[in-house]
Image 1: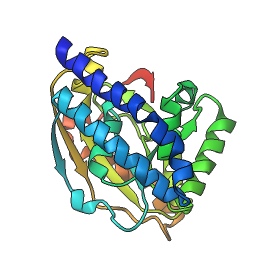
Image 2 (image 1 turned 180 degrees about the vertical axis):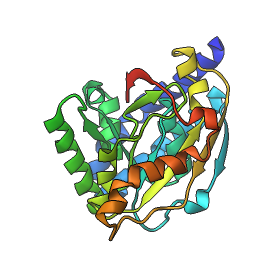
Image 3 (image 1 turned 90 degrees about the vertical axis):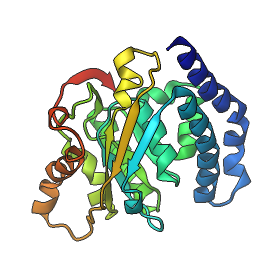
Length: 249
């Protein structure tokens, strides 16, 4: 476990630092913001592939055909580990940003990578700031960007928490489709072992998209439960409800 952990962190940190200047210059290299994000995403993909290989992640992906190729979307699913970000970026095959906790914006280098990928920083302890971040995310989706949000609001013990309805406004207010995803097994790589890396099998399931354009108010009100049922359908029954580990994401 020790050697695997060292190799994994080295692959990730060295890749992030060695390519940092390219990320900083991406905005000037391309006139089109979407092209700039694609450029940064491609760099990140190479780093992530090597990182997951060092970690010994055995990844099985189902439903890749459900990922839209020619339109943006809002990716919504359960959240088991920080590794979720890596396996999503590795398999989604296109630029996507994440709604992340505001504290990450204070981390040098990481902040610049996240901004270049199109992430939105949300302070969930401040209602006004949360709403501001949500509106920023809606604006980005309307402009053609894809975003991922984890509606549990935190990483868990591997079992799902209730999905928070406010997260779905990213899709309903922008008219973008929802792409549900089920993440199964990433907690065994990292969260169950503290910061040590353990080899594990991970299953990702991309479900068929849900169109939100033209949804009635009743359909919108039932959306969080509907998506949670879909996400939970690819988990064993005992993992469909869990507890908060008090680690915000």
